[in-house]
Image 1 (cartoon, rainbow, N blue to C red):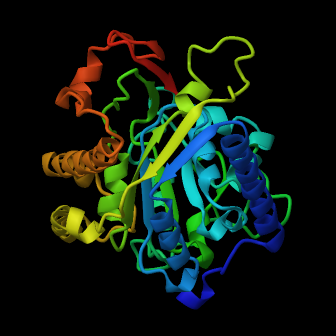
Image 2: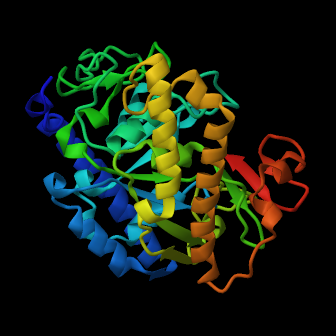
Length: 374
């Protein structure tokens, strides 16, 4: 498949439904933030300028990653309610997120809603054998941040199946959606197959769990963020974000009616400055590129977002992911400091710290924090 044969966009009914879903949810979040909460936003003008520069899909030069702390079940989509309304009905310039498969994609209705809302079905290792760093959805995220067409190991453009016969998701508009599977049995639209999604925007919560603590600290970051930065082409821009307040709107200790967001709370969303990906992560990406080239000489070429067993588990690969993840977490902490919060204990960023926090499941931990899977 030549580049000019890559489909430009999904069908217009699908695009219309996605615009309606994204825009309607965005307006509801905006109404709650500015009508029922006391909301302040910092650094928004610079972030909007970045979105304006990315509005022309053809002119984009690289993808965009936003990364933030995770303090409530409503963080996404509530945080995007701070965007002006004119941005909310343009899915091509809005975020893609990673949604828990076992919560957001359990039936046809939920699957369709969250897919139209630009969430990718993501398996969690604690609940699924298909979870982890190397699941197909992470490959989709890497390709969304990049620019197709994506070549397979034979040098041919990757062409996912055109059939949508999954019990989890059906396309009510057309049978022309290119698809992928997360577990070999389900079927989901493959967003990276379309020209309109080149160098897209992906948001990620690297903590992987809701974490509520009186001191407003973060858990350690998981390594998925490092794959997005190291393997996307070219290196994406990265914008760190700090959230405060949504944990009071939907605190994990809330009682009946538990499903109702609490109005009247103070909320703040702070956008940090865009990181120059090449400067912040260039040395790590160069090491990754060298490793990948050396491995390709042994095992053959690999499609973008696909890695060999050696690149998955070698000591050097894990070291690169660990360091990349540390730098991203430090960038979010830099934004946290602008809010006048004291530096957290360095041990808070270590996975070993949370190995001793008690049960691996959700609930209150020994350090007083409250954790929930989402």
